Length: 190
Image (cartoon, one colour):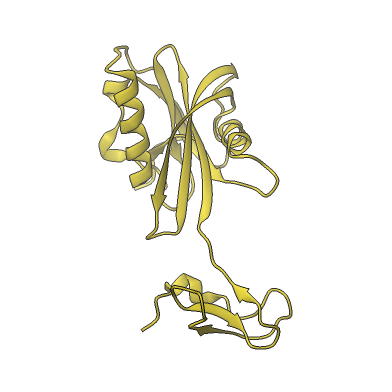
């Protein structure tokens, strides 16, 4: 039985020489690896890194309703895959601008959340809104501000979204304040 997940087996050819990859037990490895019989390259599949920010202003946070699958129509903070050549902080700032139009100053690390079942590690920062205006983009159906007690817990996008917001609330207490008027591109997807 293979210890590699099905997504790890989708790589069939070596990125160095284009030779075929096969699953092998290798010396000094604790699990089967994809190995190129032609050039000897070991093809490691590693988790994807996601960076995000919880944008804060006046005791409330901005969340967005996802416009893309997976989990289209559910609420999350701005986040996305890191690009080569950028730091986690830079990625969190970039994703916030892309998904909300808001400029943020990245603050302290909130936490790091591992989701081994999907091969993702999520790095989340606290952030302070320093400029911009909420703007909908192709990845965003709606943007709204939430007080800690108004977070839509039953309609969050991912386990890591829930974990990060629970951590944020535990650090910031139960500040009060009404939910702001949302901007929206229409009703959320079913």
